[in-house]
Image (cartoon, rainbow, N blue to C red):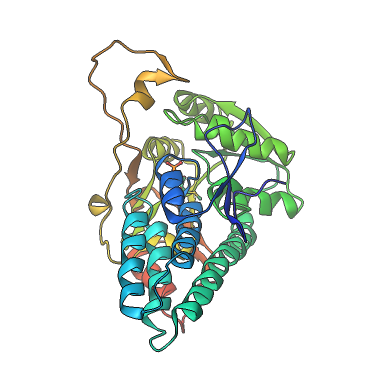
Length: 350
Ligand code: MRU
């Protein structure tokens, strides 16, 4: 089995997702600058995986700080976290993980630089482990929503490759398969970066899960023919009102699902929920290089000088979302009230 991201004594090891499915190449990053570049360049991608990689990047950077003086340690630590936070704007897991790492430094006044470094490494490893645990819980809860014999459509890659392991949306599918259900998957290819064709198809096939690849514009046809029974996607950021930012094209899929009376589920850990953003309109949407649209594998497919737009994400309004599957349970409407309830320690959702 492959490892998406892993902490090793030598550094942070990541599978280079740009080269999949043709080549399985692992790269070792020895400082936080390398990790920042890896996130920006999509060596590692997917909201939870970006968070885990950033936490490990912070730990790597901190490990290299030479100064024993705490004031200078904190100053250098600040520049490490700022660099990692500048890599990609939409997935809130990045900022969530960095602020968990920063809290270690804030909450441990009086500790030496050596002690702080140890604690930071331990925290990054905890973030990694917890991510896998959360995915397994989502898999367990979410699998109840899928009937044996159903076919599920997914968009982008919300699998083991997008997380520390197991996956969110694909974790739910894995959970259902592990529970003995017969589940088939349709994977949207997910233009322009092709996470569906390159990554989802690859990891499901590796797991012997029945997967059929379609281009994005085929989803409506498949639904009209009655071939899709549920949609499950991941999320990059969920606003307090339940609006969901996810890979570009997700909104279109949600509209199609509504038209065809098909449930539209979002699987995401609570680290993806941003209670500070009230409405999906306020979620920052990353605009990526136009070459992702004008070129395929380095080959130009559009006229030189053509105007291009390349937003990497869109926002699905909460009214189109049937349920949000989290590690704390399944959340339904009204999202404003029920998402808030997830963060109330005394309340149990399930
Ligand atoms: O641009 P990417 O590949 O980082 O976008 C990934 C997605 O949109 C995923 O669906 C999302 O991060 C959820 S991953 C569990």
